[in-house]
Image 1 (tube, rainbow, N blue to C red):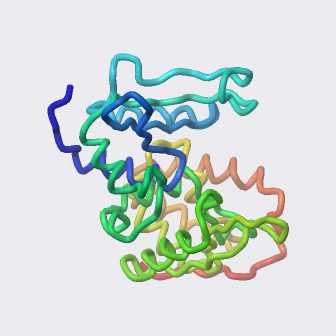
Image 2 (image 1 turned 90 degrees about the vertical axis):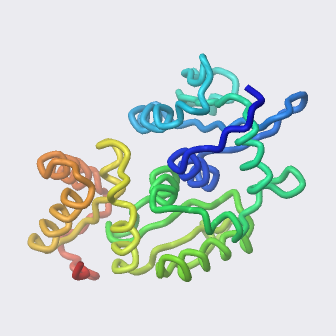
Length: 259
């Protein structure tokens, strides 16, 4: 297994998106090559298995397992964990994304991100918030300069405008905020073809008070993602029923961009 085999574009895209989200590349003591790993909660099991199945080229015989909520690193909830083989190709990616064995966001590898990579980042750590028409990417583990570099990359390469701001007033953690509905729509349109599983559809459903605007966005999600309209409507109904801050009287920002 020491022969160097380059990673496929699909695998590289998933890994690069994941290391910005819920994944990591690590070079463990005693090993010549790095491994890639990630974990997701039990409620995201469909997404977990989709991602694991996409990474068969780096998987060993036992590549995934279920962690009990009281088990080691269980964090109090049931988790599913994936860990790859130790491979030379992953070592190359480790060197690309790390400096002095520390993960570091740098432009030289951000330029390798694809729409699939961005979709992985959003599905890992992105959320629609506030009134259902704004968003946030939880980049809590990165420094402010790193988050600003990611912000600049999105602006220059994808023409997506975000705001870097604190997680909250008491925190020193920084996040990427979509303060504009139009910018969030533009970003979602880029990544909609790469919704992994139906379980992730709620992360792409904006909420509108205007019925026509709502139906237009639901139709757009179905058309671009390829999921049946009936499925998207079912997830919309479920999301709306759970949206605690959804106020029928507030029509602010009811705007849908033209395609």
